[in-house]
Every structure is written in structure tokens, then in C-alpha cells.
Length: 108
Image (spheres, rainbow, N blue to C red):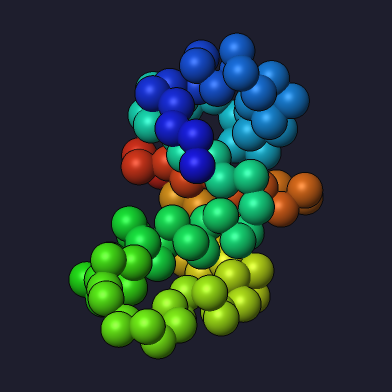
């Protein structure tokens, strides 16, 4: 995941993605908020499992006593897709190339 403190930072690093966001959401206050960019659905799902909405389950830091870590067996792409589909579209955007961009302000 890459965190950008503003649209201007994103525009310098990923100009094509920045242009796509402008075309979809137009200019707005979202441009001044943090933008998180996940290169794949899998990256988005992994983040949510380890630092996001599932963090209270403590899946990453648990000692499984030589048992396999369940994260290694989760279909992260399918979970990422389900998270995007069930998430609040005013905060989550999936590009045609399956990058996921989130904002903590909202796109409006």
C-alpha cells in the first residue's frame, strides 16, 4: 500500500491514476485528504486482514504453534473483490486495472 497525503503527491507519483480519479470524481475536497493506493485486490485484502477492519482478530501476530497461518490459505483476490463490492463506494474506488484507492474524506 502506498499512502499519499494529498492528490498532488499522488499526481507526482502516479499521474495516470490521478487523471483517472479526476475524470471519475471531478475536483473536490477529497484532493486534500489522504489517499491509499493498493496495487492489487490481494494487497487491499491483506491490508484489511492485518491492519484494517479485521485487525481485532489478530491474524498476523498470533502464534499458531506450528500450525499454518490461515492468511496463507485465504483467496485474497476474492476477499478483496468482496470487500470492494460490499464497501462504501463513497470511500473506495476500484480502477479498471484492479488497483484499489481509498480516501478518508470521501469522493464528494
